Image (cartoon, rainbow, N blue to C red):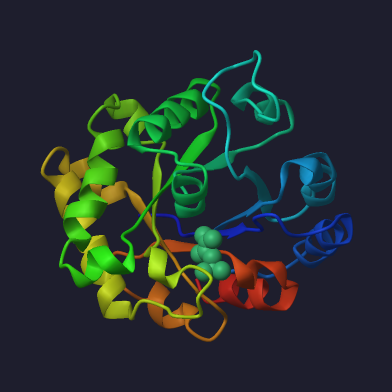
Length: 248
Ligand code: PEP
């Protein structure tokens, strides 16, 4: 009942050539069905990606957005602008944004609202640091991040949300959460949501992110509450990303 989703976060990487090679590879490709595939390239490549992905299985994603529609915010990009370029999904609350750009839960919420207001689906990223895990605070931290946003949305807005659980200690480190560790947190998130709305919880898509690759994807994706992946490093290589999609 939950359609799997595999999303590639290129971060500040990629090139026009990479965009084109993904477009070629994902045209006429045999993918498991049902499956959604999204690539989040850096802003300057959105237009080229829209063209290159037009006849492919890939939908377009962005990596962030400003909460405002327009105005004096040098260097920022609004949801309205992303919408013009055919963006369907946007990452919000990625741990790199939370840590390096000091985005707190309130700013994350504002970005979610901005995306929803223009019809772009947010992928809300949440996850604990190693320090928080070692202190036994994983569920407390993750459920705070989830609750801060989800509890304030209208029911129809919640249905547009996808959540990506990404333990911070697993991002870009080569250290993946075990399938059991990931499943445990996913079950806690779904259970928390079920406390408010059982139907929503049953349909809510939960992605795992953190050093997912072609070798470990199948086992992670086989977990009961894992409905897809958010992939960083391994989404920069066509063959690796294709293999992950095939495992979904
Ligand atoms: C990410 O940046 O969302 C991510 C999961 O990165 P990586 O796959 O490289 O750990």
